[in-house]
Image 1 (cartoon, rainbow, N blue to C red):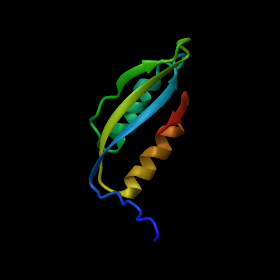
Image 2: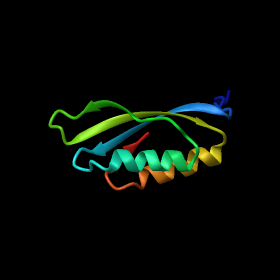
Image 3: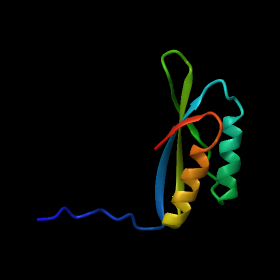
Length: 87
């Protein structure tokens, strides 16, 4: 029997996790600008830093209206200077 694929129903609350270089201090402000551009008022919550302090992680709760919005926002966030990983 084939596995059933899980579809995301929109609107949905999505929790992005962003890993950024600690040396890129302005990355937080740039993330905020991208979120505001898409009408998202969420503030990234600082979660962890790497054991050597080179990276910080943020959790971003965002309400997304469509798959297109999710894909566009993911693409823009991952392209920011200093962002190493987005999931």
